[in-house]
Image (cartoon, rainbow, N blue to C red):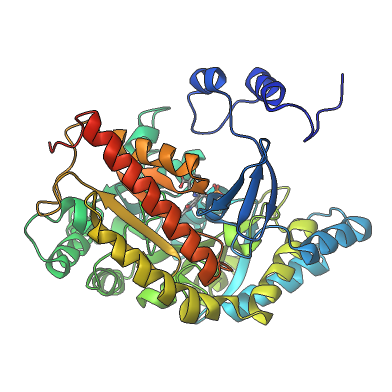
Length: 466
Ligand code: PXG
């Protein structure tokens, strides 16, 4: 077989991709007809594709390349670790320096008494760990009937059986008999889409109080935990009203149920603090982490666990019968540690808070004046704009949800900007190292894409409200 390299023509690479590679969350037969976009290089916030286009990556890959592409320090640490100790497990009373050093660093960065790390290979695996961990915790406490976990519609917590069950994505539940038993969902704090005539604050309180109603319905002595993303990411960058999290915290405290903050996207600087829980004043017992932990340079995730949960499970007198071959993988751990050191030493989280967010916020908010935009919102470096044919009513389009968002994303691609769509919301989460000049380019390309999308909708008669 000839060697497959970056130098092959795009069409040849696309044909091989279609023949042998089945893609996640994709209608593969349709993709095979069209051909995948092939990315060949990354540097800073920039991608290069197989046609030589330079693309501004407004999504940091899949919300993960926080430090930006192409950092030599991370390549070097991976090479060194592979030579020194490419693999060893952390089962059977064994440990190694990368797993030890990374856990200590995470404990240093995490707030409060979140002092203990259980490693996984991804965010999905970490959430599977969390399901087993919180049930085990209540078992050891002598309350095994406390097993129900409450989550939210339109949440994303991963794609394993456990992760997808915790998630509230209707399309995922429809395939493969999910959710698994013992996981239930309440409404999401999505004021723009579901708040009607209510003020955002009143709506936020109402949605939080669905948690209390659900606990009372199930029986407080049967509920193990509540899980939520501080800001829903894959659900469309839904920033909750200010009233939401304090009320959720009050309810969790009142009923003594465990609070899991899924920080897979919001962790490691995305919201302008190390963790989204700090931005929103949440005090979780467990945090799910992945993505920005290694800036996507190596697959690694985990759970950060508070003293009480850790000591209960660790001191039960029995093994916690759970773990992954790659729990604490030394190469991934070494890369993640160096990534966190670089984020810290270079003040990248402060850069988000004091430079990039304020600069982007002003320009992003201005997009709300565009005729197609009903709302523009941003926290740290994660933002969304809601597309609408009728700004005053926040009305959806008459066309099937997602039709307009897809068309807008296609214009962004054509303008060499990666901006995702979730339904008819456009979302961004660029690398945290983005500079003001690069933000100008992002805004200029986004505006051009919105203008082109708007003109196309007009000429195709799609600018009508439902
Ligand atoms: N929790 C959250 C909050 C996530 O965003 C996961 C868990 C699962 O992590 P892994 O590493 O198992 O993928 C995620 C992942 C999208 C998209 O379409 C988002 C994610 C994954 C795939 C697609 O925005 N987030």
